[in-house]
Length: 342
Image 1 (tube, helix red, strand yellow):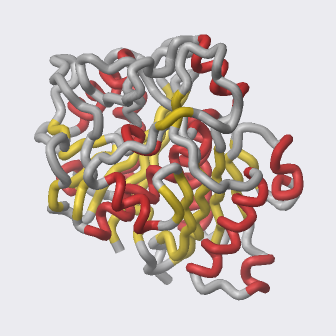
Image 2 (cartoon, rainbow, N blue to C red):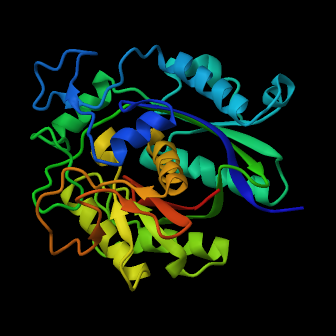
């Protein structure tokens, strides 16, 4: 029996639109989805922009439909869906109580919530503890987290997210509701390896040398039993914040002795907090399957602290089957997922 773990079905919603085609159409050329927030009052805020989707319902309704659609995409019967464990990554249970009661496990570990859920699910499937698992994650921009990030001056005040750029000014929040079905065997993309590591440096700032994230990348490669030179694309965590981007660049340079094409799709769809890891996994999978790598949008000026091979002018052709998607969170949590195009 194969120990390969694959994504066999998925559903995706972001401010870029619904479905795979909408994500790629915007992400490849770097067409950012940031605009004025209309969902709640921002008149007393320093920043008033985010990447919000149109015509969205409640988070619970969107998540329920995402799970159903992902299962249908994977070809699961109603009986199979009913017996498949659900791993759920959300900020809190209050808005999703009905769905939360059905979840086998709930992840609230900030920006690595969804990627941690994927790593756990992949391990359980690979080692024979589960046949399949649905991982779902959701965040719709709301006033509380918006206010916290704005008060902490983490939000970009020039309406643009500029990952790795010298003049980067911060992140912008974004909507995401995503579900994936993970199963043993072939599928749309393989989860070839996964890694997690902490740097225990600071409650909010990452270790400047990026050693925690580097350790997570190395763990993912070891899990896949593959060398670093198989990786042909990195979808970086890069939020457009000063310390985080520099730390991530250091981690990438530590692991990869030669240049690997890098971009951050947060530059177009925004930071979806607990849902980021799942949205960016799907974006990486779609890019590899399409054979085109998305632009690192918003970039203007090279930063000597971020000496990376950034995709800045136009989408590049993918030259390898494998890509990495990276995530990091407050408290020094780091994750890496190694994906192979199906």
